[in-house]
Length: 199
Image (cartoon, rainbow, N blue to C red; front, side, top):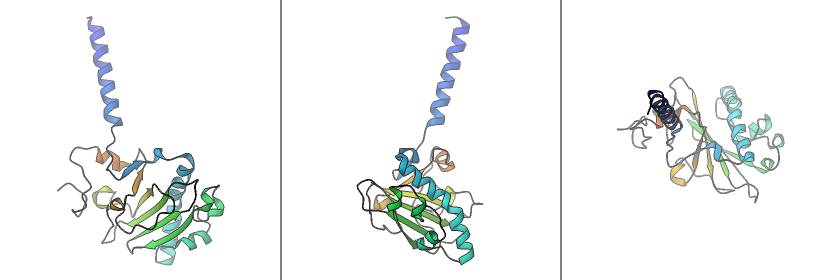
């Protein structure tokens, strides 16, 4: 084998090895990539993420988390369902205020939609966080942690605080910094530790 062929083989092996490392994603059992959603479901997911600044602004004005009805009145999609394309117009939104966090549950009894959505916003600077809690999983400069969860059934009832134990899945985008931290050896989100770090 010539030296040029050996060098080219080594370079090709390194490139393949780098691509393998960069594309490795370690999801927790209760996590899914947002790319697994159908196109209509991705629209709801992206609209929920886009609604967060409006929700945070209304919370600052009102002094509490806004209810789903107020978001509808303020024409914040997807809560203002008239702004959404069909079949997302049939989603019915309800809010559950946990004090340091709020959950917005969106579901419908429909054969076309197979998911129930839950937008969870967490005040990272509050003393108590629901599981999985923001601990080291979030940027300390971030005021509000955003989580979008789904359940693989339309019209699912509100699960309460502990979503993973109730069979819900946390949607993450491939570019989410949390996924990069989860790919490190030894990382875990531990329900028993105060900060989510490995004990």
